[in-house]
Length: 226
Length: 223
Image (cartoon, rainbow over all chains, first blue to last red; front, side, top):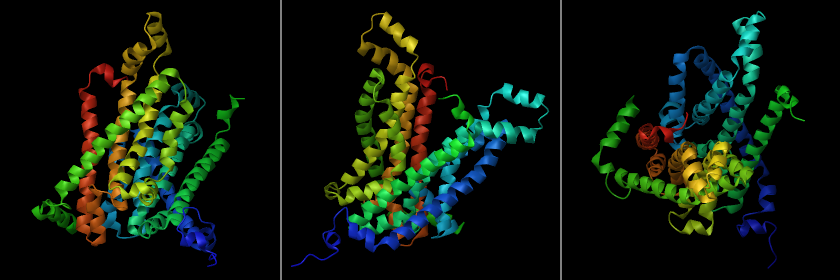
């Protein structure tokens, strides 16, 4: 008997070149969906977290409740979070994005707030002495100085989101998680391993990308080091 | 609102509490998985972290492990384990995945805790003639306890979440109520299961919070 070309598929091997070449489109679509879900949820998370952190910084009484609520949200396991949103959003991509936004909030708010609080009071007073109004102080002094801490939070939130998207497979919108879920039900080893490795690759790539952005945005943090 | 009342009705139906698929059995499964795996993870991670921290070696490994743990999807690991020979052994994949994901936070926090102990205090201990072992157990460990316990707390919350996800890969625990609900296309059951899981996770977090409040002042640290 001659060996068929898609031999390793038939033998259900973990690593299979034929899988990569024959299912390129499926993999590509899954990666795109994964990136879309992650990107969208992190961006929305950021858009919600910045005002929340600013409010918590501005009004001291708001900090406690904001941090408490986001911490409680973070404690809820991902599968339960998606399930709790089911009556609101149904089986949709919106459900996955909403769940991921709620998770990223904790990390983002906590880090942005820590960054804002770490701005030295003398720096603030110096800016005020130079005639900076509250808005200009915030935009040109406080936010740039809070950037390293905020970016650290953003990196953690993004990496977590990449990994959590896979759980979205339970509602059919899990990016690479869909392939893992389908591969589990059919015992398709090559598919599960390929999709898992791609997940980690996306997470690492996103982390490095954000690290690069952070370096570009905060050149002064490197000035001291040689 | 109707979903919530339906979920409440589902939860309060005694028929759903008994049997192998019942809430009571799943709750016990979840609790046992969490507690046993937390104990195993502590036994693995804490001695390693304490020794590494005491010697001041392997810092990069201990700190980066937590980052690696975050990048690897829990669900992917569960499914990968299920397809390996471990998968044939009942709750094997669940237990292995639970321990794998609980070890990094334990290791990182305990290591950082030991390293952050004031070096002058450690030198003072040495100056008083304490041996390395005495320094570790009587000086470094008590002073790093807040961070070590914080690691245990993070690990416990992580364990509850992972044990829930295990249901997707055929494991036991409260997550099974959710996955069964999805298979039956029964939103009330899905929401009821999710509520149980959420309450369970919050109770675990709450237990740690209360323990921390009740602990003597030195064990709470300067936070």
